[in-house]
Amino acid sequence: MSYCVYVLKNLKNKKLCIGIAEDFGREFEKHQDSVLVSAKVYKDKKEAEKGEKYLKSVKGKRELKLKMEKKSLGEMA
Image (cartoon, rainbow, N blue to C red):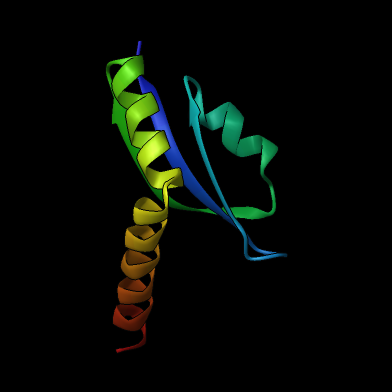
Protein backbone atom coordinates (compact mmCIF):
# COMPACT_ATOMS: atom_id res chain seq x y z
CA MET A 1 0.00 0.00 0.00
CA SER A 2 1.22 3.50 -0.77
CA TYR A 3 0.14 6.88 0.55
CA CYS A 4 0.16 10.22 -1.22
CA VAL A 5 0.76 13.48 0.63
CA TYR A 6 -0.64 16.23 -1.54
CA VAL A 7 -1.00 19.99 -1.67
CA LEU A 8 -3.89 21.46 -3.64
CA LYS A 9 -4.65 25.13 -4.29
CA ASN A 10 -8.27 26.17 -4.50
CA LEU A 11 -8.77 28.35 -7.57
CA LYS A 12 -11.64 30.31 -6.02
CA ASN A 13 -10.30 31.29 -2.60
CA LYS A 14 -6.55 30.61 -3.25
CA LYS A 15 -6.26 28.56 -0.05
CA LEU A 16 -4.01 25.51 0.19
CA CYS A 17 -5.33 22.09 1.13
CA ILE A 18 -2.75 19.67 2.53
CA GLY A 19 -3.74 16.07 3.03
CA ILE A 20 -2.94 12.39 2.79
CA ALA A 21 -4.74 9.74 0.76
CA GLU A 22 -4.42 6.11 -0.21
CA ASP A 23 -6.34 6.82 -3.44
CA PHE A 24 -5.23 10.26 -4.60
CA GLY A 25 -7.31 10.12 -7.80
CA ARG A 26 -10.52 9.75 -5.84
CA GLU A 27 -9.45 12.45 -3.38
CA PHE A 28 -8.56 14.85 -6.21
CA GLU A 29 -12.03 14.40 -7.74
CA LYS A 30 -13.52 15.79 -4.51
CA HIS A 31 -11.60 19.04 -5.03
CA GLN A 32 -12.86 20.03 -8.48
CA ASP A 33 -12.00 23.71 -8.05
CA SER A 34 -8.37 22.96 -7.17
CA VAL A 35 -5.06 22.41 -8.90
CA LEU A 36 -2.25 20.15 -7.77
CA VAL A 37 0.68 22.07 -6.33
CA SER A 38 2.75 19.20 -4.97
CA ALA A 39 2.55 15.47 -4.27
CA LYS A 40 4.84 12.88 -2.78
CA VAL A 41 4.24 9.15 -2.50
CA TYR A 42 5.29 7.20 0.58
CA LYS A 43 5.31 3.43 1.07
CA ASP A 44 4.83 3.71 4.82
CA LYS A 45 1.78 5.36 6.40
CA LYS A 46 3.76 6.71 9.38
CA GLU A 47 6.27 8.40 7.06
CA ALA A 48 3.41 9.89 5.04
CA GLU A 49 1.86 11.22 8.24
CA LYS A 50 5.19 12.82 9.16
CA GLY A 51 5.38 14.44 5.72
CA GLU A 52 1.84 15.78 6.03
CA LYS A 53 2.50 17.08 9.54
CA TYR A 54 5.65 18.87 8.34
CA LEU A 55 3.82 20.57 5.46
CA LYS A 56 1.15 21.77 7.89
CA SER A 57 3.79 23.20 10.25
CA VAL A 58 4.86 26.85 10.10
CA LYS A 59 8.27 25.86 8.71
CA GLY A 60 6.73 23.51 6.14
CA LYS A 61 4.20 26.10 4.95
CA ARG A 62 6.97 28.70 4.64
CA GLU A 63 9.11 26.32 2.57
CA LEU A 64 6.13 25.41 0.39
CA LYS A 65 5.26 29.05 -0.28
CA LEU A 66 8.87 29.81 -1.24
CA LYS A 67 8.87 26.91 -3.70
CA MET A 68 5.58 28.14 -5.16
CA GLU A 69 6.95 31.67 -5.55
CA LYS A 70 10.11 30.41 -7.28
CA LYS A 71 8.01 28.28 -9.63
CA SER A 72 5.74 31.23 -10.40
CA LEU A 73 8.71 33.48 -11.17
CA GLY A 74 10.23 30.79 -13.37
CA GLU A 75 7.05 30.55 -15.42
CA MET A 76 7.07 34.31 -16.02
CA ALA A 77 10.65 34.40 -17.29
